[in-house]
Length: 536
Image (tube, rainbow, N blue to C red; front, side, top):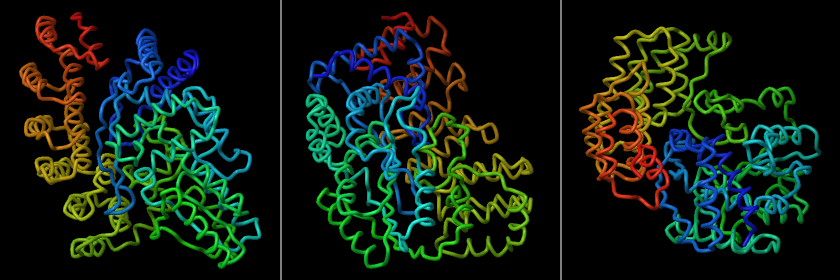
């Protein structure tokens, strides 16, 4: 087992990283209030001592981690989703501590950064951060474009791995780690047991959204990368996204076949729908330079998310998600969009059974460019054909200064029925909760009624999301009603209810309730909240 000093250093670094970036990059999840406890030096020390001691006992049962929740989050198309992990703050500290303690050795196993081949999540020593900020998706794209322009290669193969995180073999990751004699075998065993526990012993899958998972995912491709180099194949990679360069089509297809074969031996397969072979012999250099910072759906790679200012550039831009942020239009864009026939765009959308993502963004952008804001009320029905774009639409409405109050009410009424529909996917309901939490659409009654009508099978996160949206908005009577839900709540909801009670009820009412709570020896944050209220 690793020395305690190494574990403590890894644990404090894990805590610092969570304070800086949160537990996940999945935008659907709000930053958990539990993270704020980590600012307290006494809490940091207490957690670090607890977690390091549990790791050193070298028994998985002593880690006292929880089962994972999951929410499906849309990616680039109507049928493409990521299964995103709702990971507990305590669990993420444990997970990160284990992985960070061996991350230096993992980085040494990878292709050296100086080779400019692998641009994803290069581990190192940085304040608050885990990864080198010089290596990210934009840098990967830039390097790809440079190689297109300045090498003798005439063809490039673009490909990525199908369901990468979901299909990673946990035992193969374990085997690769064990091949390095400098990596502590006890830590490897604990990581393996933790991943198998979260995967329900299925042997496949890493929790999506965690920085610890990002480090381990890179482990899975170490041997693949080395194999490509041994074959003299010229390539660049960012996570599961490969670019393979070749002198001609035959060489490109041959190299693709070699990559496919190697991946299959590792239990992975290319996404055939996204595999493309392109002629770059006559690539326009001017276009290359102008396109490097552009992405799909009018979102730039380096665009800062106001709600997540600490989210590193290495994460922004590669999530592959349908955009949730509306970017302000430039004057040039406005003039071009004004040329569109808005009536035709909307009629075509209404009359079609399905709708393309580009059609939705074009309609929204055209309405705003032409300042015909009232027509935004026509969009909710169209969005039923592509509900993944609800966040993008709402963000556009929020940023639209010219829309009337009457039109806002119409839009609000359109979405209200979706809040009470049990068949609406959880991620849509969570985004709708966000809508009714904004100052523009704020409606406490809709949120409260949605919580009252919540079913236990409604999802892993929607209950917590609703409670977060109601925090600080409830009357005493409403808060007492929420308090009564405590004994039917899951751990995420329990903590949020306790937080709301502790900040809003009188000392007498709080004391009586907290004294009645069953002691949760395995939940640090519940114990902490209760203790802070003078009851333990």
